[in-house]
Amino acid sequence: MIAQKDVTHLFISSDNALAAAVAVPATSRQLGIRRIGEVLCDATALVAGDQFQVLYLNAAGKVITSPMLSYSNIISKTRKVPAALAHQVSTIGYNGTDGDIVATSNGKYLITIGFKDTLKMVGNKRLYKYGEYTAGSTAKNYDVAIGMAGSLALNQSKDPFQRVVAEAVCSFAVTAGDCFDHAATVVKGSKFVTVATNCQYSTGEALAVGDYVRLGSVGGGTALTSPVYRVKALTSGTVFEVDRAVTNASGTYAVGTADAEVVRKANGELAASKWGVILTGNDTAAPFEVGKYGNNLITFSVGVSADFSTTEVRLGTAPSIGDGTYHAVAQLDWELQNNHREAYRIAEYPVSFTPDALSTDTYTYVYEIKFKDNSTEVIGGTADSYINLMIVAQNSVDANLATVFSVS
Image 1 (cartoon, rainbow, N blue to C red):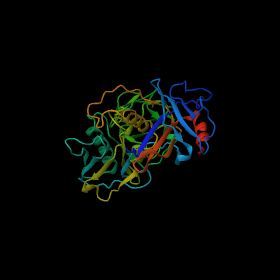
Image 2 (tube, rainbow, N blue to C red):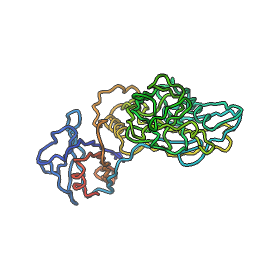
Image 3 (tube, rainbow, N blue to C red):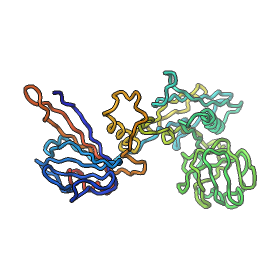
């Protein structure tokens, strides 16, 4: 007989404490721990010599049990805080701290983005996107940054989703006093911003074509890494148009806050003002459907043309798929619930599948407890195999699990 070397049993808890003084859990996705020979579950600490099962009422209403496990056979146990997905951030020129775009007169500026993520392949070739801008006889760093951000957005405008968000940024200091005098209504994807009453800022100063507007977030203020837009037109007394579609979140950017501020044309175009383009992987917009579109991480390379000269291209944030995120847990849940079906997933979708991972979950810890099992008999003795017990915990069950398994 052959022993399977590594088997994982995954349980995704509800936000309920461990079931106690009952034979089986009664709440959807609730866990219970029951010792061998016992009828009722309990939440007291396991000790050497104890044998137990994990009982689970899954989202489909079926009681699932783990194999009988021996506490003495634990070879490792961990309790990890989930780590959020990290989007790749690359910068060209100014990055919020230093750097600048080198202005090359009559320069032909080209940015090439080469995607490396799992959705990149078209005809077995890498997918590329481009941004381009041709400078005038007197090149300006702000024109290159604004032009490049607009070109990259336009180049992706017909895609199912924008894989990389390009934003122009400027080093001119954040100035809270230059916020709008009235609440500004921002709509993501639109070029038009509406300001209540009038388009004045800094207590009565009128917004003008050619000025710049730096947008942060609702209640979050602005920063030197916040995108900057050029005002193209004042379409009415309360509406102005910017150079490209807004990438910031929709909402009301309240009066008297630094959520939206004006950078005067003269200040944005100072010789001392540095400009750059920030490129951010748009993982949150990537399609995700359990069993169909997996947990995707957008990664990309950045190439620039010769006329960028000594402009620095830097990786600001390395991409990370995270650990214990909803997408990762949901995909693993699907894989493990369906591993008794077709080995190669050729004709499996769609399948009857009730997920135990919910998008509304807030996971606090991921428990991974590894057991050595030598119960499989072979000729001349037994074969060692390993069982991995993985429990994704939410708030209420965590203290119970920490006690039961003596982990911290």
